[in-house]
Amino acid sequence: MQTTIVIVTSGIESSLILLRGGMIHKNIKDLQNNYQIIIVENSNNINFKRKIEKSYRNIKCYLTGSNIGYARANNIGLRKVKTKFALVINPDVIISSKQVKQIENIAKKIIKFSVLTPNSNGLLETITNNSDKLSNIEKKDLKSLRNDILIKNFFEINFVPGYCMFFNMKDVKKINFFDENIFLYFEDLDICKRLKDLKKKFFLLSKIKIHHLYGGFHEKKTHYGKRHILKKKSFRKWQLRWTDRNWHLYWSSFYYHRKHYGFIKSFKVHFSKLLRFFFLKNFYFLMNNKNLYYLFKARSEGLIYQILNKSAFSGPKIN
Image 1 (cartoon, rainbow, N blue to C red):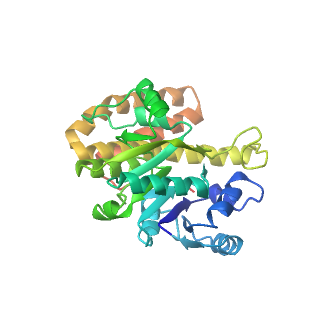
Image 2 (image 1 turned 90 degrees about the vertical axis):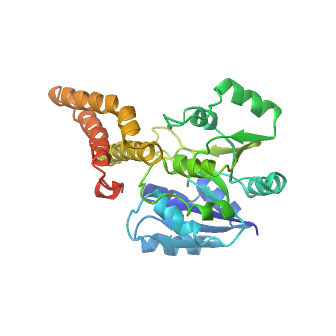
Image 3 (image 1 turned 60 degrees about the horizontal axis):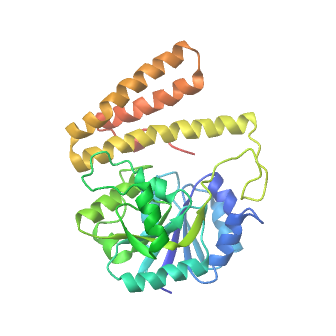
């Protein structure tokens, strides 16, 4: 066994893994036959730990006690990996044992790599629109990437999105894994930037196509095997979660640019956004639109907290 799979779960993602008949459940059942799986649950949900370890083989579940963020939780899993490679995936990524084996085989051919990622829905748009506003690395356009996918089995890219990262453990150990100051968002961009600064390489494996479900609720039949209709209470919970995510998105954006390019450059990148968020927050307050008021309030406060150098963990927690 050359690869260990690491999955961080929290809230609804945890219950979806145990949902019998759903695609995620079938996916885990397939992977358990050939790979050790480490699940890090961002809570103190002892019932989930018992159920997950009873329902599947080759799975070890660790509880964090509370939601400590995506980066810290992933690092708990990565530090327990004993194999040469680690595959970090989101709970809503559908990848088969056969595909993981294909990635391992290509890894043996490439040899000098830090991160690999298979092709997936939405991947090219994510790569071309990555959020580093100050990078001097030339970004490939969408047309160029699509051409590469048609004619190449694998090719070098400058960024690997966090929902599916196949790590060469030797390299990520050197930089001490993910930055634990980040609660959510930009942790993938940050780890790629630090590896890139060490002249490490990332590759997209164009002929291996996985599926990223994106998670969340849909008012239609979903891949989870059930119909989810958002009732008022559920919608409010989702709404609060989304508002908190916006807070962390802009905290992490300012933090990332500050860390790699300095405070002044980060401030220049975000100043116009901050003014816009203040204006829109007050506008929607006067219009009595609570949803958009809280959204832009969260965005502006996320930026302000990081400008004042406050920790992301002093902000809202996502349940």
